[in-house]
Image 1 (cartoon, rainbow, N blue to C red):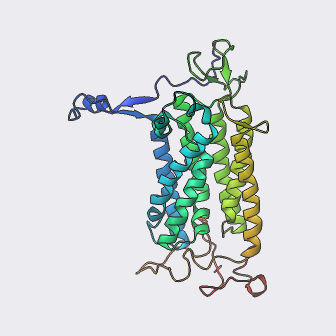
Image 2: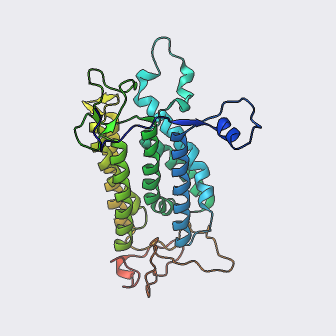
Length: 339
């Protein structure tokens, strides 16, 4: 029996768009079946929210409004490609066996994408988009960092609607109810067993991370990719734990799940990024644009030129710097220096 406080699994994971349109009097699709998965809607909602938040933060920094679209048009598609490739490579047994249809590698609608692959593919796309738009790559990465956690939190709701990627059995009252006929239900367990709702744990972890990143940014005025480094550390720590309690099959390397290795790699990369960038760039960014690619507003002034923070720092201005000059600690004024 499921306990009263347990989390019920959703009864449906999709709806038929044709039937819904017919219910409101729109019948121009005829008898076509157009299933819309809630998982896909969660991914789309996450992308939209991340785009809006990143655009707002870039604009506050001094970038042209809407320039984020010139970047995500590359980052999002390549992010999906990277996510699919990473999943296939880390689950080869699902796609490469005697009698397997090789085209199933392309059937992304059947499920199977990996966050770490999306980060790699998305980074390649962002590099291309930043190069074409003139935005500094690390400026974009810092603007994106908290928005990524928001997108990932919303995207995890899709795992709930699919009743997938849940954790080990638990007796906690907030355990997730999983029907015994679910393909992922572990064999040998009794009907009514509750499982750790790892989707919920990650949602909470990511949203706490958003608040933490915004606080760190305001407190230490993080730029030059340092904030993105903290994102990698925070997300990697969370995933390294969550992966250890999930029951879905995964490739094992040296006794460790491949996604745990990916999480550890993210933490290490974040620490290195913070250390290197804080040493190379002790001052503030002179502009969100690369030298020679600056955008000049035609009329209105930007709200801030030295921080992404929503709250303006009254009375403080960034130190003046030429297009190719990085302000060194000995040359910085007290006003422009990081605290």
